[in-house]
Length: 387
Image 1 (cartoon, rainbow, N blue to C red):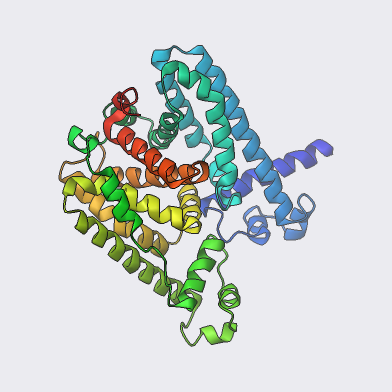
Image 2 (image 1 turned 90 degrees about the horizontal axis):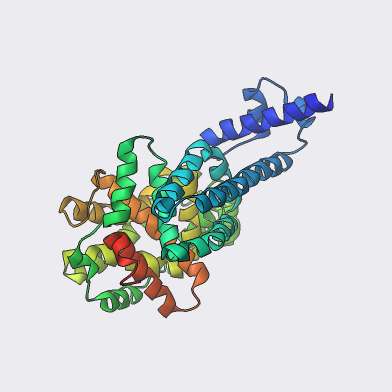
């Protein structure tokens, strides 16, 4: 009987990852899960008496899977030659991501600010640092390889392997961008921007802060009203529904960030500066608004987020980056311009998050971001000369 009970609990876990994972763990319930499994909610309670207990069991399984992966990865890397180290690292990571997306997304869902998953990743980086030093690779390069692992996980063909290897070997840019002489000037211009959102509109600011705090999944009119210090009924004087409220705020956010970014990029007066300018803009903006950084990281990991919110953040940066690619200023390595622009944006957010957590001062943050820019633009050839 105990074995049957245990097997049923494992089946429920499987279904929870499958069913809830399909909706990126948004708006989930035991009632819906029980219905999908053809059982009653009281029957489900015999195995998990609450949603929290079920999620704790899911967390334990996902964490154990990730820890086993890191041990297996470390063991296999010790057996390969220096020549095959990078390829082995990326391919094993990519395979794990392909086969365990629900687990990875669930861990991101449980870690609202991303720090918990960061801790696991950083533990792996520390364990690999000795091997990386033997190969002459800084930990910065391992983090870039993690992003390339994500790219490689999206395909299983020889072509997908060629893509990440092209990026690693050659980088995404050219010598002119690599020798960018105005890093400091561009960074100072980015630092001079006022990134505050809705400073003179407390109600809109309350909506925005609620979205970030709840990571969007649990935003309600009641929570917005509480944060704004007003009654829920009074919100209807501004918006007829929660949907209308979110769409209005997301639209305003898109306009706000787009104006800041296009004004900044336009002032640079040099098209080749757009790439580093984008990184400087995102770095300084997210350093000052960590709530937005945590939100973006969580939504990227989940592969979800409201379309309107994704547009509000995605729209201002994506079009200029895509234009740079189409003008031939970024190498495509066989990817579509949209994919190149998205890869750059995702890697920027991930590296900025890491640097914010690890860098103690603004100067160190700036220098590390510049090193990251050189690596993704110049490829592995810059590792021994400029980093």
